[in-house]
Length: 271
Image (cartoon, rainbow, N blue to C red; front, side):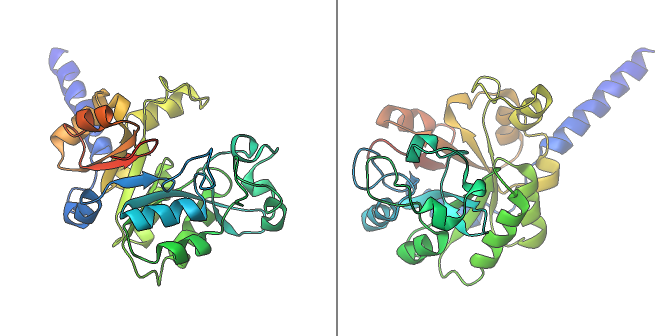
């Protein structure tokens, strides 16, 4: 009986490690992202004329030589825009979500305290123009699969370096299957401690990176505050995966994160 219990425990451990394992053969493709700090949603100030995920914020980041991280979603009429939140309340003072509005409807709203509108992704790409490394997050909101496919199509002729990331493991897995040469990353955090309203089992699976076996991400972008979370700790110690820190908000946080991470996404200060 003891041998059965031990055998079962060993099998469960091996299954856990199989689920946890990322892709480990692509770190050289992430090297350019290590050489610059990555400006979260552009180099922004929501109390200034260059709010987050706006054209002026992206221009400022490019001019300063920072890499850029941004968020993409699809509108009701299938236009890809750059916007982070699940709804319009915080940034636009309006009701509803991106995917409930057409782009024309969204243009009536301004971002934060500025006169800027929610930008189209294609306009943002013109501003960046391949000058700095780009990290594109595919949002879970709306039709994530259509968003992921649209991203692939729009980036087919992009002249610069980019990678994709998502909290949704199946979006990362889609890129693994359909764009195997593009670096892909699994975004995660400690969903329980962050107060997520996802079902408990989904929080557990995502926090512990248990769908890595589907996505086999080339990098893990983890909330730097929870770098000690057990599954993430094991993932980076057992496998030579690239580690991306989000979101660094001070020089002290940056200094501490250097012990764990190789790529640093920042906002709220100039590193």
